[in-house]
Length: 159
Image (cartoon, rainbow, N blue to C red; front, top):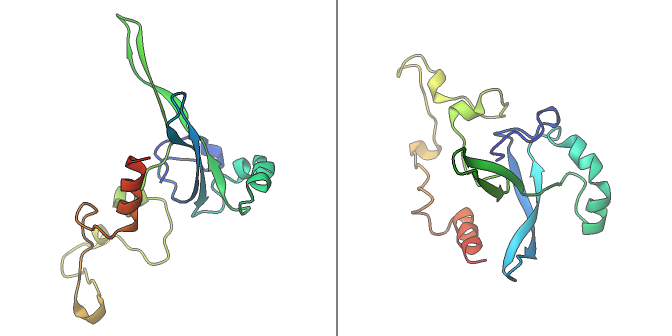
């Protein structure tokens, strides 16, 4: 999921949902491996359409599908001290892993099979249907050792 507005006209906005498809690894000045580019696929095909159009030659060179978008890290001043003229520049990818989103974040989005529980006006008006009448809530990421997302996050910590 995107964490900030990069290009609102092109749909690169905070909360835009995408799937990480490929990570391009490079090297830091000290020779350490680090991700330098990400290829993602946006859930909404209109998101990043202009950016994808400008990346046609890159997609051909990297041999990736036309619906993938390359995301690069961006730099932002996150702290500035007027008295010491100190500025902290943070360079990071504008996306985070997300297995779910809040009701607030979902406002304005369209989902095929989704209605927020908060839309119910009373407990009596809320019905949750589960397979075999058993609701099994998902495990928190820290508890689910077999989660693909957790395994990938642990792998990235050691890169």
